[in-house]
Length: 123
Length: 292
Ligand code: SF4
Ligand code: SF4
Picture 1 (spheres, protein in one colour):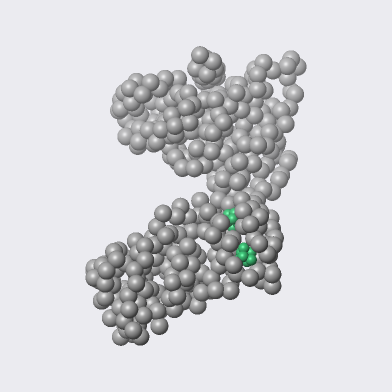
Picture 2 (cartoon, rainbow over the protein chains, first blue to last red):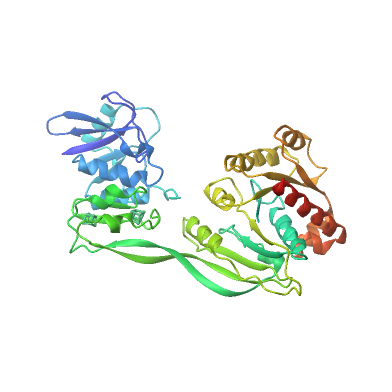
């Protein structure tokens, strides 16, 4: 399966970025082959609806799961419609994308069945 | 002529000044008053208009017919606000992000989109006892976007009532701006002829004054300052006005009677005859600033 992780950088040891819509980048890892790809987040410069745009972006990248630190209601709705499972990486200590992937693979991450916060105003 | 009364934050006496100015102006001119604070309009508490015209305003939001839509993604690509998303075979619309621009409907190759009116607020208008044509915009609870209401409010011109026996010399529009320094404040100032800042001589007052003054400067509008609760705080606002060439047009002293009058729902000019003359002088100075 393909899992997307929000990160700040473009390498496996880049730190995890807890924001979803405003994450600097996403990596997509194929957990079967271990292949990594890195993608700048096009929603970073969006004036509004960053979560919606980022969600469509990772859907297009073929992700079936995503790991981030928080999901707004609109991002969550879009990810759910795309049948992408949302996972939360807890804690604030800096971790690399590779460490997050380990946690994901060993089933230590909790799914986010709902938005984690009330979202931002669109105006 | 259009005068905007603005202040960085709420609670500086902005509405008090705007309504008092409107009342003295109405002694001589035809006056239109627009309460542009669509989140918490409160000028009606002071001007007591009879609001007998009510109009809903809103935006046209898209609705996608899933039978006709082939999920081509054009709408999501064209939307500058990310208010419409296409994932897999599903199209999602986020009403609270939509600006009602119509681009998605226009560009959909399958004509799968129709538009529906989403009521986001209303405009109430009427006349005050002193003959001021009054209108206020009000955003519905739970709506995120006040801008469409504000734009409609600016377009609406409440009927000026001919209570005067002689024709008025001029028509003045006074806009009570929302607090803050964000888009709605910019929108309120756009198209105006003069901006009157109401501030307090405190570090907070100065901070907020600088923000709104920057907007007016950006829009190239002449401006002046009313210092409310003069006597408290420090001289930093004065110094700032001098250095940025902002004339101080009125100082309202710190006075318990003013707070009492406001609490009782009267304007400054109703509370105190002395203020009537001071506000007449203020209006004259504004007119002079605009016509130089
Ligand atoms: S542009 Fe029209 S057909 Fe294409 S995804 Fe949007 S609604 Fe569907
Ligand atoms: S009407 Fe405009 S803002 Fe609303 S979804 Fe369509 S393109 Fe986006």
